[in-house]
Amino acid sequence: LKLKIKLLFDYPSTLHIYFLWLWLHFTAQFKVIGPNHPIMATAGEDIVLSCHLTPRISAENMEVRWYRSHFHSLVHLYRDGDNQNERQMPEYQGRTEFLRDDITNGSIALRIRSVRPSDEGQYRCFFRSSDFHEESVLELKVAGLGSTPLISVEGHQDGGIRMVCRSAGWYPEPKVLWRDPSGQLLTSLSKTTSQGANGLFETQNSIIITETSNQNLSCHIRNTLLNQEKESTVYVADPFFPRVSPSAVALYVILVISFVLIGLAAF
Image (cartoon, rainbow, N blue to C red; front, top):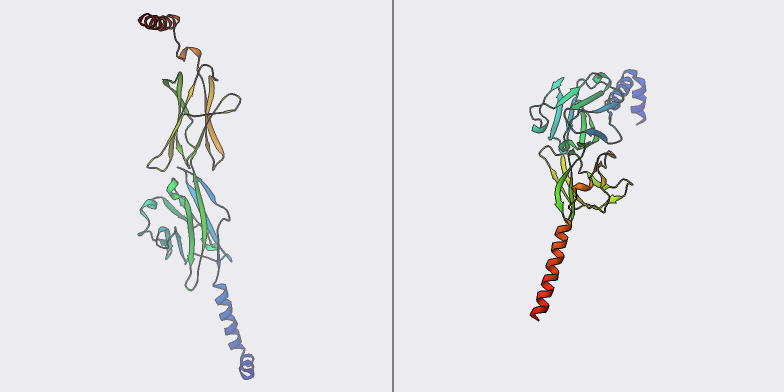
């Protein structure tokens, strides 16, 4: 061992080559850094996912792959200085763009156009050089803020008026609330929610109001992920409520008395 050390220091060129090899070996390694928090995207809009290398070395001649849960569930692939998307998943075809303006500094990004609820989840940003590879995981969340609620009168029911609140374009499934002017919650009659082919939710919620209850009410639809809501207010005037005419009441009373008298006479 002493002889080997002596020879190593006796021949500076050998020592220089050894340290050069060490330097090349360790500098060839890198880390991939992505956002340390979930990225929020609005359904229907574009989103940019970014990541970079540390140290800031060029990735121009590397393979850069964006994929989902499996290595071959390809979202976008950059290799040999160009995009290679022959095996790209069908749902991303024509919707991705590789942004490489700062690739010489190890920084890249992926634009996804017209985000859908199905795009929600984990993405992996993968770099591979000739002798090393590393990746980072990103989390994408999708939210949809739907249309302003539409309140309609659906007719008379159970001595009152049945009101229906409708809205579409929400993600995730929204929360629907009826409130009176003081902000107190009102009990709804029924709720129907459906999810369209685009992944967005449409909701329909009904309530019955009577003349004795508060005729001024509002429908609130909230996206709990964005902590935002939309609302509509309506006032139902007295003439809309079902009424019984005095003559009908008198006729009903006369009929009841008549049946009672007939019953007594028969007895």
